[in-house]
Image (cartoon, rainbow, N blue to C red; front, side, top):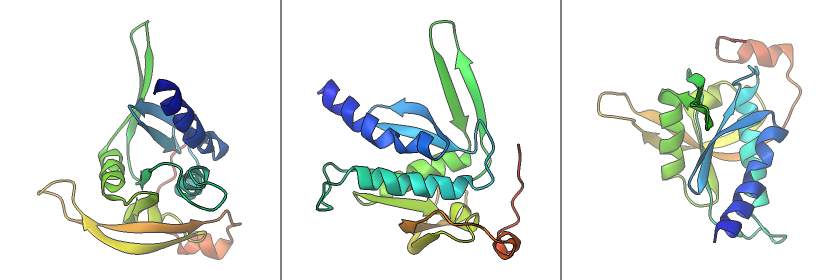
Length: 173
C-alpha cells in the first residue's frame, strides 16, 4: 500500500517543480504546494493553475479516464512561510487565510477537478478559463468568497494591456 501511495504522490507532485512551485508539505495522501514562495513569481497564480491542469492530466489514462480520484484547491493571498527545524527534521511551512481557503476549495471540489478562489482568478488577466461554482466561507465571521471551477489553463505571453487590466496586487520579492 505504501508503494502504491508513493507512486501516486510522485506522479502528481512532478508538475509542481515544472512550474517553479515548491511542495511544502506531504499530508498523508495529499500535499501542499506553494507558487511564489520561497522565490517570488509575478505569475504564480497562472503557474499554480498550469500545474493543477498537468496534475489532473497525469491522473488519467490514454482514454481520459481517471486512474484514481484527486481534488485540487487553489487560492492566492498573503501567507507567512518559514522553515521549522529541530536538528532531526526540517519542515517548510506556509500559514495564512489563503492556505485555509485552498484546503476548503479542495475539500468541496468534485473528483478529478480543481477549484480556485476569486483572489487567484483576479491575478490572471489571460490564460485561464473558469466558471462560477457558488461561494464558501472560512468561518461565520468572514464574508463568503466566490469559488470557480478550473476549465483550462495555458501559458501565454502577457502584453502591456494584460498587465494594465490585471488586479492591482503587490509584487513582493
